Image 1 (cartoon, helix red, strand yellow):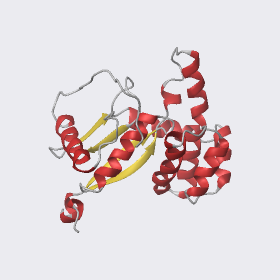
Image 2: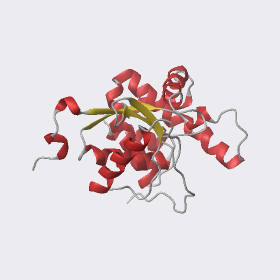
Image 3: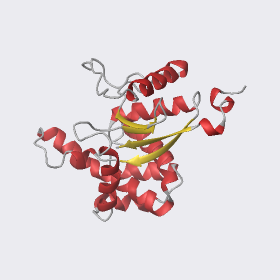
Image 4: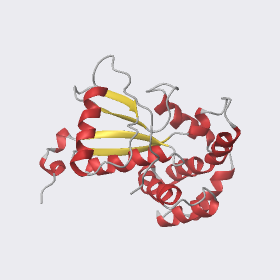
Length: 216
């Protein structure tokens, strides 16, 4: 059976740049939605790393959230190390393995879990050493800055940049959604997101979250 993506000419394909922090459950939800979109729309995804730890390092935060962010340095450092040593194309599968463990399985975001994710992604488990060093922080900050500069520092992860409905490149935070839209619902959300993001002067649609992320 021919998919919508296959039926559309290659010249019409879009590339969506996606900045993620593997620690964020909402970014994980959006990333799984975007993978669903790829089955129905001619979209390719380039994965990039951003960091909630970098974004919030100088902000006054509640102690419990600060503790979470202090721990979140490890996974993003490992992602940057993996991309530098093995190419950016490994980020998609490494993110899938990390996110599945962190969010779907609820495993601790520690070295043991990171090593398991690396092994499942076909990468050396020694990359987990990067979690405890600042050797990759300059590259991490540059990747983070590339994404956050597109949307401003009053938002977080994820950030998506893509050719919009009018052909111009647009960038936005989100969408924040639960549960993960599937099938045509995912495709319709993609079409609508591009439509509003492409509207000159459009900035925000928002309502209070009343549900936690559902990873079904």
